[in-house]
Image (cartoon, rainbow, N blue to C red; front, side, top):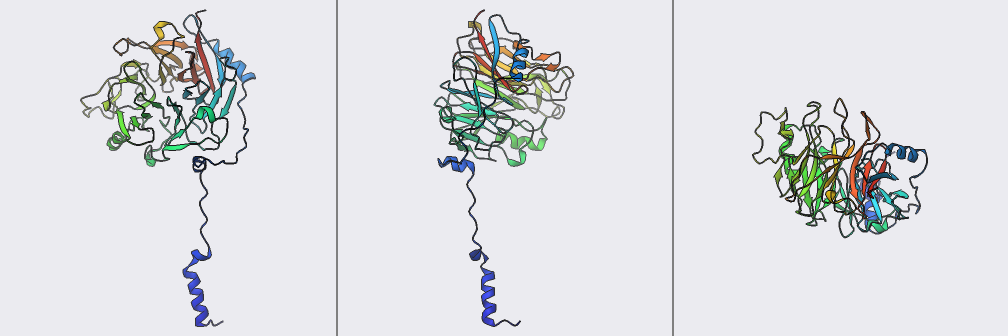
Length: 423
């Protein structure tokens, strides 16, 4: 069939402008955009609770009978919380938020005020999350969740968690906490704190056992293998401390505003080296020695012939090698006897890189009047390591308004409560 010039011209005209014939479809808004605009996602108002009774609860309570504490202290099951990691107790004491290394954050409510979490539900289930390990509150009630590569802020989360839709805003958008190319399955458990300066502090573990030399300068500029801080809106980011391998767990001492942090050290060097670290940070920009040092004064094999920085600060306390020191708080309550007030409570998750497992316990570290450690850390609660078989693996420790402590356990999936009555 022969086409006329007029028909041919019309066909060519249509081919030149396909967009006019097939208009582009708008991109649907993300859950974060929908919630930020104060719109509903359409999720049902009721969603499942985690059962708190049954065989699992009974077994956990039986195992807790094996945990040893100083005289007058007691431990009990507070709540079953799947994959429980780091803990943030709301400023009003209404609810407790618990992060995980998976995709959920849990909220635990003690509605009866009986020292037991009687309701456990997923927090903000309509908003997808990726390794939301780090949870922390500001004094004015804003909840921050540090994920693998994003930080979100939830206003008044303690009062609006009853809905599946909770307004959220990005402090650090997805992919901007660390370079996307440095995302890893390793050392991704972020921990956050709002400091006495009202800035947001975030720990950034670096993804290697010991990084290649070509990575070091970039990591140090970004604070990977250190602690960064920023304004609560994400502005004015800066590297607060550097030379840490995988820092997990930190808290401020209210007496002198120093920041204490645990740091997990190099694997594969032997059962008893290098030591784990508890460090005291007193000023921005301090250097703690990794990767030249693998823990304490122990040099790494990879950097043993390289000159370390001249201003390295060595750990305030050296811990057992490979015990995996994680959560840390400065105790500010008055329920516990005087000797514990102002001390540091910390957890050891328990070793994997050791012939005979160590750890799986809660430690106490006493401080002197000048703010330094008074000596080695001492066992406070232990018994989860049953001759090398873990009955639990403590992750974090937090303080309830009455001065009792919460301890999380991601192996069992639980929160425990430790209290003192002198009996």
